[in-house]
Length: 143
Image (cartoon, rainbow, N blue to C red):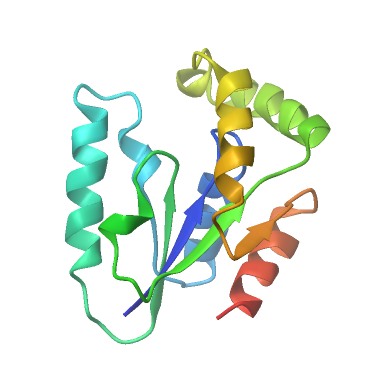
């Protein structure tokens, strides 16, 4: 199993890509589904560790914001999704309107800056200012 790790700040489009991929029949897991649950980080980490052990044929997309990619096999394809600043702000506003449970995350300005700094460690950074379908095509072209 090749793990394709989609990393990026909250509101970067990871969950949307996972949803579209599932609609196309692609195996895709969104670790952010545990974001606001009690012990959410521990649940995300536990799920990541289970997924990292899977050895089925093919590949699996895994969307995550705060799980260190080191939890997955070294052979995993690590992709940073990082929209431009203007697009990021627009997406956050739209996301918060559609998904109120995701709104109000503290320190988004700081988080965006941290992800920009962190992106320098990734061989693949997709500035995903295009449609989710186009971004998914970019991700799949890296396989």
